[in-house]
Image: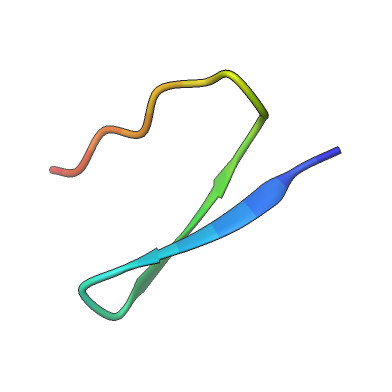
Length: 23
């Protein structure tokens, strides 16, 4: 299962529990 996270117009596909790193 994946979660789509939107940050500043960018879409990130992350796994639950995984840290989100923004370049």
